[in-house]
Structure formats: C-alpha cells, structure tokens
Length: 173
Image (tube, rainbow, N blue to C red; front, side, top):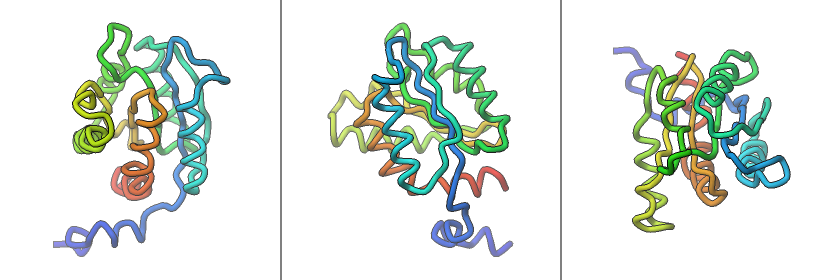
C-alpha cells in the first residue's frame, strides 16, 4: 500500500494548496450588487482565509444560466472552486440543486449532511429544507449554499474554509 493511502488528513493538509482560486455565484431573482450580502460575505471570508476570489456574478434562478456559468467558471485556469449561494430551497423557483447536480462528476454527500447537522443546531428542524451540496466538476470543487448570510457563514467557517485546500488536493490527484 502506498504511503499516501495510510497518511492522515492532517498530513494531507500539509501538502495541500494554501491558496485556492474561487468563483462566487449568487443565484437570486431579486439580489443586485448592493443587496447581495451573502455573496459579499463569501468573498470576504474566502479572502480573509488567504484564498483568491477570481470572479463573482449574480444570476437569476434559471437552471440553464446557472449551469452555463458554473461550467464556464470550471474551464478557467484561475478557478479551482465555485461557491454558489441561493436557490437551494424547495420553492418552485429554487433550481440551483438540479442545475449543479446535473454537472457533477462526483458527489460529496457528507458536506450536505454535515451542513444540515450544524444548521439544525442553529435553526432546528427547518434545516431539513436545505439542499446544500458539494461535488466535483472538471476537477473543480463546486459547492451550493443557501442564500442566507448566516448559513453561508456557518458553511464557510465550519466546513469549507478548513478543508478547501485539502479538497482541492484530493480532487486534482
């Protein structure tokens, strides 16, 4: 067995990239650059953690547009992760989950499970309404978060930022 197969996550993190190029996509029928508090928070938290924000955009909750933008971002050399916010609920207009799900080469269901577990501690049973997800497309990390700033902060601080370099290391091997 190779040494890497027996190494620990801490050992993986030591050889993981310290800086990840991220693209932030806000999916909303109502947000604009002045009111996009979740997108701004994501950019701020990523930057404060030492990552690069290589671009960001706001798009209406239209599956074809979401799919196109995520796919295009995943072809850019300066993007290793795409972070989406919005459109993960269960209303008739929420279609981010389906748009992203159709693109994923690999799914990481543990992200959504952990996110909902942590959310439950903050919002109770309403956490089950979230369809937050993570996966890999074109060897890039793709993560869909709810539109709530509190949910984005929780996901980034507790899950994504601590593992982003490690995720990229594994996704690109």
